[in-house]
Length: 421
Image (cartoon, rainbow, N blue to C red):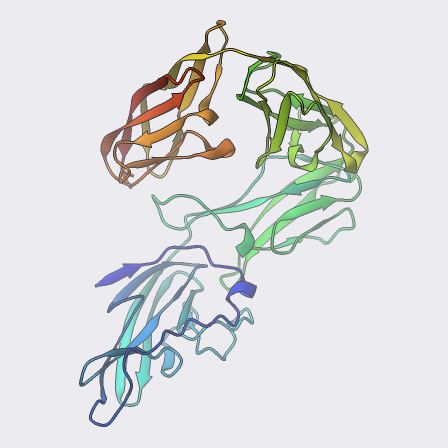
């Protein structure tokens, strides 16, 4: 039997000293001697597939003559016949990077193969581990400029195996500037950069390194003064009508003297300074503000403050309306997604005063076959479709009950395609 365990390596500090010893199901008593041992993740396996820069807990199971099985991870002698490919921890000896892992932890250092063995008294068991190369490793952020005195998060993304979803392994990287600089600093484990001062025309090089396997990637950018700050009403533009209890999203972006430089999303660094809370409320998401109309007709706006730059910014004024949702439209009608990609479904609502606007965040989604696909919920992920690596079609239905207690719904078909690789 073969297992494949493909997860990004967890942070060394989280793993260091972790105890994964399972309680024995049997004790060694008179006439109940250990007679066999096997290795595996949760059962007996003879081989394992891993990606470099990942780790997995391997267990040593001892079977007793009168029944019962015990997990003996800390009592066996662990050996890797090729420790430059796969390091196996005995719970005491530090890894090549200097981290002490729980006994039985396998750390894939580089592509290749290694046999891992365990010995307890006269019992012996082994497993073959094949380590494949990381398919892709990158720092996700297209910014060429970062605003002076502002923070910016960078993400480390990896594809561990061909055809598998990209994973966020930001907290697994060791972050630094190369060469070191006084213009900025970065959290060594979280990829958050704080820009101290302008670099002029010079670039800074930000590096993320994966410990143990010694893989690293980099990105470059300048630090520059912010020359403009603006709200992007990306859902509805300048439209101001907002039905009671419905919402709109927007971002706050910083611009630079170099007009070709991508805007920096600084939404999460802003805070509400003033708000007409008799008519609207606001909540902060992962990278957008969400303004929701209350249940009272009137006009409302808010003022945001970017304290780092001592700047304030006024929003448009929303006109809260007493109007009833009469119909919804879910689209696109035939969404095709190939694993591991995700898709997006959006819902448009029509109100009795003729207003048409997005209402995706306010409907409930259901999937006719959750083994093929599921739907995201909440402000940041509403309507996001995640599929499994399977060919098949399933229906997605959006449902909402309006102010007159009428149930409105619409259904579309999603086509799920397995990865061809």
